[in-house]
Image (tube, rainbow over all chains, first blue to last red; front, top):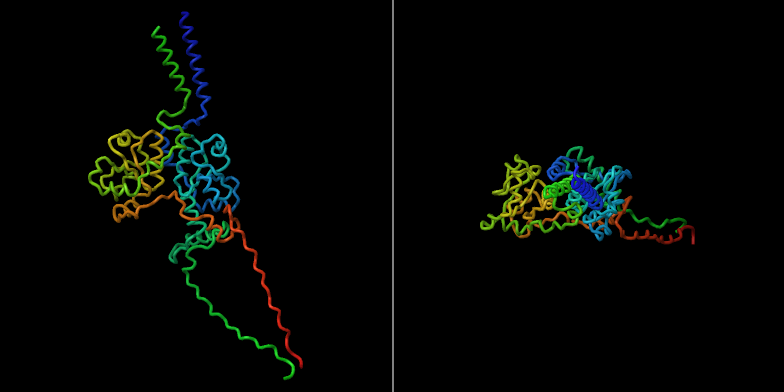
Length: 207
Length: 202
């Protein structure tokens, strides 16, 4: 082997080591999927959790639930779901939250006012190969419409719908949502007020 | 000498790329994507209406329908092309998204699908697109069939309710509004002292 060959092989190894160090030092999370694969994952993966399912799990105090509120801190401070952690979308991949977002033990559920913020956060987690993450379908707006203020089904609705409504009414009471919508539509006959005769002072004795 | 330098450079490049698992097709890193403001790519209902009803501008705008071909056949925006969501990255589809001569207006079967598509394009560096909030039915009802300047305001990410107030309306088993109204103490009922029962003889 020539003297130059040894030098160049040495340089090659040094360069490779340097490249490795540079990549290791980079604190950016590493993509696990190619763009085309990401679209397949978005299309095929079960990505939504319904408000009913979430309510059910919250009511049973499910410890495997990690709720992530992606809204601003101001909105979060006004109202948030039970035990939710506030991580605005722009901070969702910050190092301090990685252990919450990327884990196998708990089911991570992203939510915002609708599904939009959650869809973005979820897509990023899939790009990074994180598992166990879901989008709260419809976000807090749907949470109000289905859980806090459930709407009574029409009389012709199926038994399943009535059972669902019954569950939602119970959930509404549990989460402090107030009254269910539609209850007032059922005409309840007001019972006629009963007029009680004023009792005359107890008489007695002799007049 | 040159030969060795070239081999050296190629070797370095090869080793660097082997070590990095990062996809080269993504322009934005995940963190950059999380921090990117995507609101600029959401089309306003007014502009959407203007584009739809203006014949002059339609040459530079291209509607792209992300739904399945079967659904697309049942109705779509006039002159829209159908690129089902999953096929966006195929070579044939890519040229539509990478064409810098037009601005693509993307809609899908749901707002989320359009959001996914827009966010995806943003991550791979495509900039000449708008997404429509609301699905095709929303566009049909509010732009195509009954358009007026107030009919198409739609932003699902805005809070539609005062959540805290709704929760505070009735104290449930769990009231998680951060500033619940203090519960009023139960009113104390004062009972009137009953007059002494009459009776007996005066």
